[in-house]
Length: 259
Image (cartoon, rainbow, N blue to C red):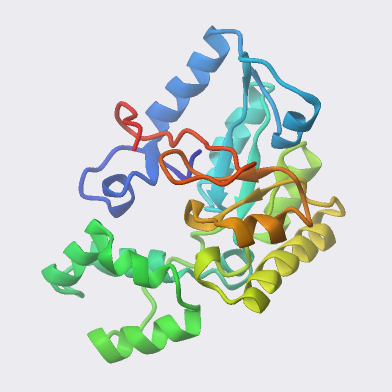
């Protein structure tokens, strides 16, 4: 499981601090290791037909624009991958958590206390459960921040997703707003999944074959609703799992520690 692939390591960068980014060097080393061991990269849908210990499944969450260079390198090497873009991130070019992260990295726009809360996860837990309009309202009310800090090119475009889909990169379901599935009422959860399915189908003309749960969160109800669309359900290693959700190894900049 990967999120962002950035040009170089920066310990002060929010994404490295939160282990949601790796450097280009780390990424190339990962691909070299795969090739050196003679492993074969597969799209997630391959799991349905059976797989061996020599099969590798590379996945990218959220749809960040720097995935473009990473996907180009993967395809150049004759490899394959699966991407899980959040529909609203791509269509609106905006994400609450990423917006607050960019405010954090542009200190002193926000206070040290707010920065620490975002970095240690307390604030992030709130942000991952609210919509973008609600976030903007609370951001102004709580912190007096009116302007978006987001880079409008932080996420891939629909045109890019279609381009990579045509080259064999699978596009999977990751919800519409990227809110935590387990904190949504049933009607909203159903819309999160079906809206994402319809968006991907209309965009690529291919029905998505897997679901990657935003933030890895799921429960029995989430699994039951998801199974109405696909039997390939992905979480994140270290969490509590419901059958038949599959864990993924979270690739980090430094030595992986199973959490």
